[in-house]
Image (cartoon, rainbow, N blue to C red):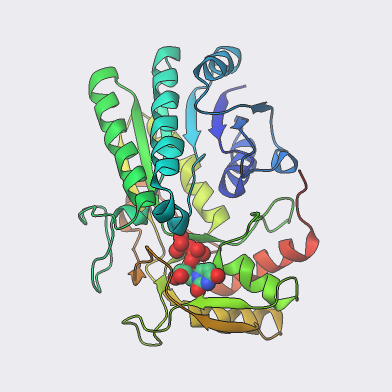
Amino acid sequence: MRSVLVTGGAGYIGSHACKALKAAGFEPVTYDNLCTGWRDAVKFGPFEEGDLLDRARLDEVFARHRPVAVMHFAALSLVGESMQDPGKYWRGNVAASLNLIEAAVAAGCPHIVFSSTCATYGEHDNVVLDEHTPQEPINAYGASKRAIEDMLRDFEAAHGLQSVIFRYFNVAGADPEAEIGEFHRPETHLVPLMLEATDGTRPALTVFGTDYDTPDGTCIRDYVHVCDLVEAHVLGLRWLQAAKGSRVFNLGTGSGFSVREVMTHAQAVTGREVPHEIGPRRAGDCTRLVSGSTRAEKELGWRPARSDLDTMIADAWRWHRAGHYTR
Ligand code: UDP
């Protein structure tokens, strides 16, 4: 069977990608050091525990599985943490990805699908972002992802490694069958925190700032359902296999929701109040990050099917009540 090496396959997005890859006829081989991922989330193919900074281990896994491509999800992804400890991000994202990319080239693996981020764009007042928007990150997380994008361009020029780069906006929701879902420890993401506050697992959600230049003062984000997001990755893999060449795609829905709006929808979906308090701004947060996905729709034929906010919250709520992982 055609294997795909999925770095971060034990994490939130990576585990959903494994399920989608298996459904598409590939064998997803998870490579994960479990620093934030969960062994219980690896359900759809083999698990190779390992660190991206361990080149010998990477070489061994490439030799054993001979993957036709890499899907590279493994990353540190907390904006706030990246501002406090940038070295962790340059090492854990940039140096780790360099190791992976060099191992892929050495093994003759021709294709990589890379998880990048809208945080590479930085602040652009009141524009809908597209792939041509200048990349001017305002936090170390975004800067580390932009550096990896540059690295991929250099490695293609020198070694022919082709890539599809997806710049994600905010990802939410869970597998509608609730086999896998979003679970971080500590949790820092808006939707799961809101649901934990809703069911009393935590006392309250803190809203990070109500003095932004938006209609209700809270930050605006473009949320995409995790299942739609990973479907784009399968399309990206097929794109590379059809020899269409390297390409960058934004994955957003074109509509943004403020933190307060997400709370209102969560109350409607769950039928419960979201206990919350107002706190200060979080360092590194952009006011508004919204993108269309015209290019992904036109060129890849991507059709987000579950990315309306109520469906995302309902799927996240079902997963939240169904269970969680243990180490
Ligand atoms: N947010 C918040 N309280 C929290 C966590 C997040 O108000 O406890 C806000 C955050 O400031 C941002 C939005 O919710 O505007 C989404 O944050 P998240 O951390 O989920 O994703 P990010 O935008 O950082 O990728």
